[in-house]
Amino acid sequence: PPDSEELGHATWTFLHTTAAYYPVQPTPTQRANMLTLLHSLPVLYPCTHCADDFGEDIKVNAPDVSGRAGLSRWLCERHNQVNRKLGKEIFDCAKTDERWKDGPAD
Ligand code: FAD
Image 1: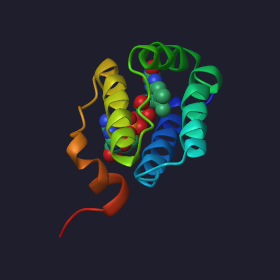
Image 2: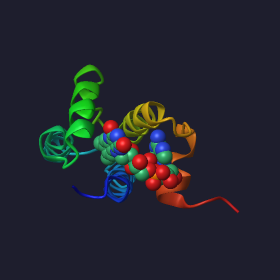
Image 3: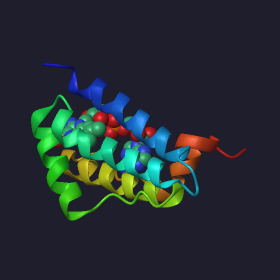
Image 4: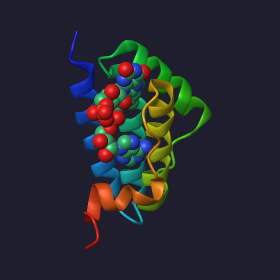
């Protein structure tokens, strides 16, 4: 099976970075494609139990694809859900842009 730590890290990097640069006011097409991308993960993500749990989570917590801020926050909360399950540190969602977009303030 794939190295789930590296796969997870790479996937979160892709997802958080894509959310950080998602349009502030996405077009209907952009929203629809983001929804398709997120709903594809439970079907295709090559860690089956991860994919299953994520699918259950996003059934209860529907993706917010309304715009950059909402999507970034929603994704941060989903990642924190996984962090909680794995006993990892909870990330401060106020720091999402600093981590994934702007870099640390100096
Ligand atoms: P990661 O959790 O990969 O995080 C990478 C970086 O993101 C961190 O260094 C931090 O800077 C930042 N970060 C952390 N939390 C947040 C947040 N909430 N918001 C924004 N940025 C943040 N692994 C399992 O063992 N079991 C599972 O069920 C499981 N499910 C997963 C489901 C999905 C959809 C994904 C993408 C991954 C899943 N993983 C799962 C993998 C797991 O989440 C980690 O990616 C993996 O354990 C490697 O962890 P890491 O310490 O490198 O940091």
